[in-house]
Amino acid sequence: MNGFKDVFTYLSYVSEGKDAEFHELFEQAVEKVKKEYIGKEYPIYVGEKELKTDAKLVEKSPIDGSTVCICQKGDREIARKGIAEAKSAFESWFELGWNKRAAIMRKAANIIEKNKFELAAVLSIENGKNRLESIGEVDEAINFLRYYAYLLASNKGYNQTVKLTSKGVKIKYGFQGSVTKTEVIEQRMVPYGVFGILAPFNFPVSISTGMSVGALITGNTAILKPSSTGNMTMLTGIMIYNYLIEAGVPKGVYNVITGPGSEVGDELVINPDVAGIAFTGSKDVGKSMIKKAYDLGLNKVFIVEMGGKNPAIVTETANIEEAAQGIISAAFGYQGQKCSALSRLYVHKKVKDVLVEEVVKRIKELTIGDPLKKEVYLGPLISEEAYQRYVWAVNLGQKDGKIIYGGKRVDVGLNGYYVEPTLIELKHGHELFKKELFLPILVMDSFENFSDAINMANDTEYGLTAGLYTGKKEEIDEFRRRIQAGVVYVNRSASATTGAIVGYHPFVGWKSSGFTGKGAGSRFYLLQFLKEQSFSVSS
Image 1: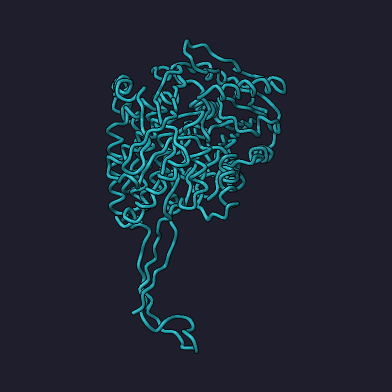
Image 2: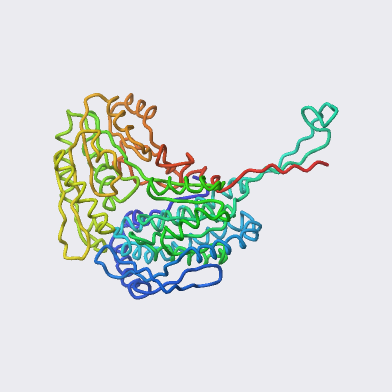
């Protein structure tokens, strides 16, 4: 792609024979951030002010329960201050021009790339990702910054000027058809105003960056609210804020407020001075926000991604080893705590036994433990609430089906919730085939007819990602015609349903997984933050 190239840090080190150097740099970064970032108190950043509150939010690492950071418990009053600052800063930021805003985002990408090991180390400590998942997420943040800058520049800010000079026929009032004078028409895309950025716990670097930059680079101002209750990931959000400010985003144009969704998040949703919301999270929260705003009569823009219950189909002609590898990565990467994670598997009866054998063999090879260690693949669940959900799902699967592998908590000598990746055989239609779990739990059923398998894959309110493994072109063609998902992969050994690459795989949710029909990392993403206007001047 001319003008844009994705960053893949670990791949670059490995391809140059520098695998050991990569791991050394990550481990040095862990020690550095423990001294410079971890355990410290951080303010709320609103305009030029750094605010502190009497009530605090103490973020704990899911790895061992140690304190990651102490943040402020923002409330409605502080949210209103942030909204006022962002509204006041809007006009000057818009008038700066798209080319200067794009240059700032490129600079921010360079700053993050310079500090990527430190940011990845904090991310691993904060939400329990292994080092490869963490560096990959930081890479994605860098790629969002550069790709959106590339899009804005290559489309000249989505603005163009045209002339209309043809003659019309004069009638009593005005003209029929065209005009007798020359019209110079600016076809403009202009920002909405203030955006609330409501970020999730599971991708607090890449998604926070992507949503923030989508708003900022198009000329909107923004207030970032990191995940601040329950599953806290506030420190990386504050770091992203500081990197963007260092790059040249003015204070007030970008603000960060930590605090509960019931106050800070809700104020962003209901306040008429907030023009739009960019949100990634659960379906229930996303839809309730949209309903609340519309019930209040607010004409607010919502750019939302709301989870998934993602299927993969393995046919009798599939390459079993490639399918098994893709299944493992998609179902159990980051402990299944991804909206794109594989959670439903449909296998042809003729290959079910051999596929299960291959999948179980690979599950047994996965190392569970402290994600800061080089050899570990699976870290902890994010919280006790997630663990209780795991126990509930395992018990239900055991009662109504068969636990093929897993289902137990693992003692790794740390104060965290470490569990086995779990494979459960059930009949399609069971509750575990319907409910988004956000856990390392994969439920499976078998089929004989490929058309039936697609019907089962589509039998969900979600429509985010989907995968297929087959050796038949006609099955690929039918899958393309019928599958109801925004991000679809066929015969992808890297991952059945996860791992979208910025600029190549638009990350878009259909059905209840999304709202606008346009996805992150796509050529249409920025248009969601803009409204169209024609401005004509006759002469």
